[in-house]
Amino acid sequence: MARIIVIQSFRRGTGKSLLAINIAALLADAGRRVALIDADFPAPALHLLCGLGEAAGARTLNDYLLGRCDIEQAAREVAPADGHAAPLVLVPASASLDEIARMLRKGYDLRLLDEGFQTLIEQLRLDTLIVDTHAGLHEEAMTLMALADTLALVLRHDQQDYQGTAVMVEVARRLGVPRIALIPNEIPPRFDLAAIRSQVERSYGCLVAGALPHSDDVLGPEPGFFSLRHPAHPLALGVREIAAALAG
Image (cartoon, rainbow, N blue to C red; front, side, top):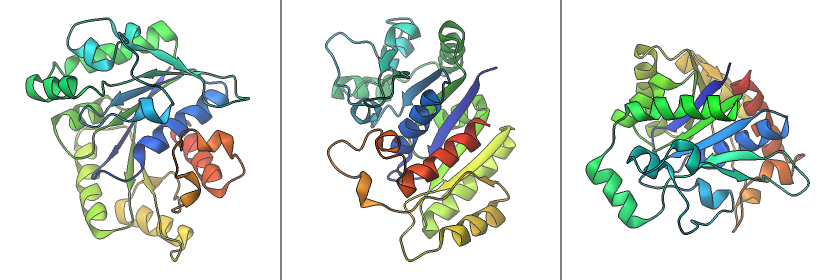
C-alpha cells in the first residue's frame, strides 16, 4: 500500500523543498516507485531543484486543479543524478506569475487533491507519494495534513519555529494524522545535533526522523540531488536516515 508523506513547515526558509527532492531521490534510488508533488502554489521550486524548466505547453498541478487536464498528464519523469538510473516522477506547480495569481485569486476544490493523489498512486503503481507544501498553517495545509500517512515537519533552531511547530503538531493530532515526524534542519555548528534531537523529541513527544546541520556545501547554482552526488557527505547520510525513517 502506498504511503503519502506530506512535508510542511511553519515558516518559509527551512529547507523543506530541498529535503523533499533528496528524500524522494534516495527512495527512488533504493528501488521504490516514487512521485513528488509540488503543492507550494505561491512559491513553486521543485522543478528548478530537479533541473527542469517550465517547457511550453507542459501541464502542471495547477492545470489539473483548474480542470484543464488529468493529473497523469502533469507528471514528468526526472533522472535524479548521473549514474543513478532510477527515475522519479514530478508533478510540478506552475511558476507563471499569471497562473500563481489565478490560483491564489480563484482557489480550487480541495477535494481534487485527494482524488488526484489516489489516481497517481493507482496509475503509476506508486510505493510513495511525497508532497511539498506552502509554509504556514492554512486551509490547504490542514487538508494536506488530513491526507497524510506521515506528516514531516521541518523546523529551524529558533524560538519562533519551535512555537509555530508546536501549534502545527497540535493541529495534526486533532486531525488524526497517523504519524508525525520532526526534522530540525539548518542547525548551527556550535550546537550538538544529538542534544538538539533529544530536546525536540522530549518537547513535542514525536518521532525525530533526523537532525541536520547547516552546510554551505549544498549551496550553489545546482543544489539539487546532493544526497546522490555526494553520498558520503555527513548531510547526505543524515538525509538518508530521514528517508528511511519516513518510508518505514
